[in-house]
Length: 420
Image 1 (cartoon, rainbow, N blue to C red):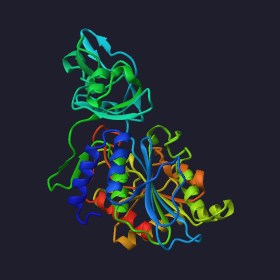
Image 2 (cartoon, rainbow, N blue to C red):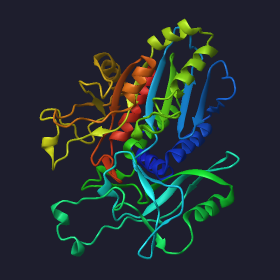
Image 3 (cartoon, helix red, strand yellow):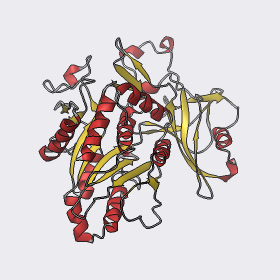
Image 4 (cartoon, helix red, strand yellow):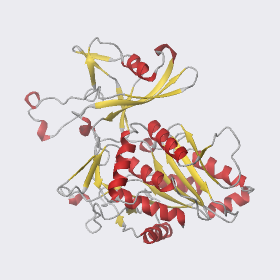
């Protein structure tokens, strides 16, 4: 794990840049885990027994775990859960759209994005193409698309309130018509024949590189900080972690932004499958596995909100988290976050052990908050769960921002949580 925020931020930048889709994020994580000595496990085969550092990939999700030498049936699981997906436009199947001599790619909206933030940005397209033999081919382009805004000369009232139609206003320009199709271009990049394509899962991404900024370089801007900042923090914390009593688990799920109800999402059986199969390698029956889960906990690591200086009244008037003052512990009376006092104590201990400052986040009562994988994991497994994460401005924008210190502080606290 990195020792300086600058080195950690450089590595986070590289991870975000290499991960324009959830499938790339899982693939890059897998490559890094293998390089760190983790053994790749196939879900179709029996799980190996005994101590070890292992991982598996399911679509756009990855789960890694460290089973230490001294683990006993009296141990528990210490889970860190994140997600790999971010709001974007998903490419629809079929031919390109044409309008007034332009070629446009048909897209639908994935997740709760800030639509206006995607205007007038150069966009790439990335994801996976699945061929008829079932093989998955990752692909990414450079800057090939853009959603141009209507000039003020043609919409004189635009600054009185921008209104965007989710269908007609948000289709990216790709080329002048007719100039060939998108799919043949992507297949050429992937080295496959367009005739062999079954379907694809392709998404837009902002091609602008992550960057530090601010009078004292104290801020960091990037796409997909929600939630690759947490995924990268957990990944960097577990890469050289050797274990300490309990089984450390890192679960980076897909599809959180659309509800998690998929085979690779937190509402699906992925994490439950893994922990039950690990318990079986320890010789535990159902009763023993349930007892092990009762000794377990989960840190749901997802981004939260720092106070917006232009809209302070949208935040709680007393609880006011700021960048570079440590990760947030997120609370909500209606359990949109899973944190309670017991889970909170676990997180505060980890932060104290790591020497990491932490802040509290609660919503303004008039501004309902979002949710995370935390309540879902607590519901599926019945384990104590706490919701945490670094604070952002511009969450769900095409380009979000955070403090330069917070990503490393989160990684240190997650490492301390695993160490117990």
